[in-house]
Image: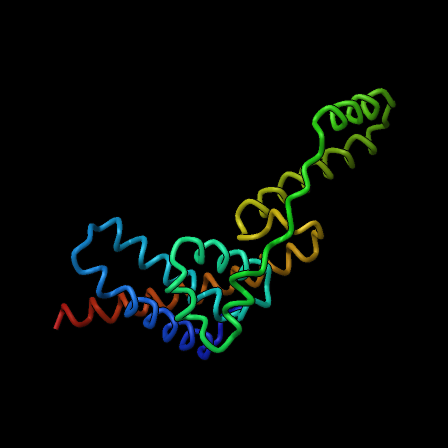
Length: 180
């Protein structure tokens, strides 16, 4: 799944708009502040491409809205910015540790064959990797459905590829301009 050229163009337009909004405040700042501004505008541009249709884009919008509300409102014009900014993500469900420990002890008491043991290990590995995905994808901790998590992850990866490709193109163009 490769990002389309129209996706790259749209990302570049949104990202440029975000950088232009930050421009007056960036001129007299440190390198770390500039880096933060570039990352923030890239995140909002990437999330605005999806117009809040994916969980990860809504999570990025909510995160950046708390950091810089003005930027988010400017970049999300025309796609119901207020509804996206004010939309709350579902609460994270937390299990009580005591109950989890007790249920694990009960499961351990039962004897298992070698094939059952292998199945249990495979399930544990899948669960660990799924949890890793939930930690990496914005808003992933709120997704209880593994299939939805995989779809969101694929969509997020395509958006990140778009972001990287556009940034590479800019660096290549800048390097070509310096060499001439």
